[in-house]
Amino acid sequence: FNADIAVVNLAADVPATVTPLLFNRTPPVPAMVGLEVKIIGYGQTTPGQFNAIKFSATTEIAALDPDDTILIGNETARTCLGDSGGPVLLDNVVLGVDSYTDTGGCVDPAHFRRTDAYVAFIDQFAGTSPPPPPPPGAADPLPTDTDDGGGCSTGGSPGLLLALGLLGLGGFAFAS
Image (cartoon, rainbow, N blue to C red; front, side):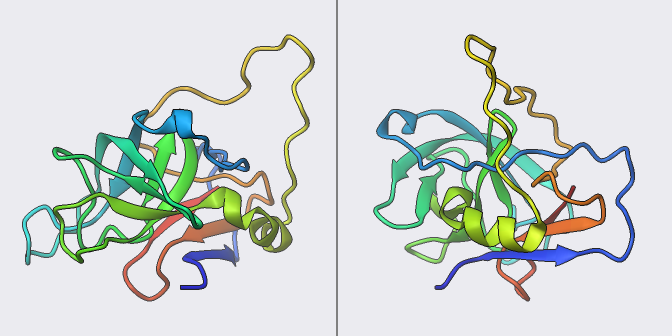
């Protein structure tokens, strides 16, 4: 793999009703293992049966991988075939996108490509930059709600689509 992240510029602005989300810019730390996260996708819910309905679930960070991925899922909630490119959210911030599993089935946690490993690529093509640091003593600026609205923001132009996923394999796309 080179990566499973793409940036696409749209011909028209996205509606103002689409609330953008931040993407993570910093490497994960060991203390994150076990934290609750949200996964979203259109993958199979019954093996071998096509699905066209968006689902989301709460699961956990299972492990930090030594490369550009993070292992997401547990025995009760994990992604499946067709979820490739779907996001994993921590406090409504996109940590990464579903990329692959070690077994190719729907029984193990999945490796998600981390957005922090591709910040330079995303910024270059999306025209984004890091947000300014908060003033000293300020509250955490990251949003904390986890609604099912989807979405991934890079803070770029309103006509930008950040497509995170396996291109051409039914990946998941986010509007900002």
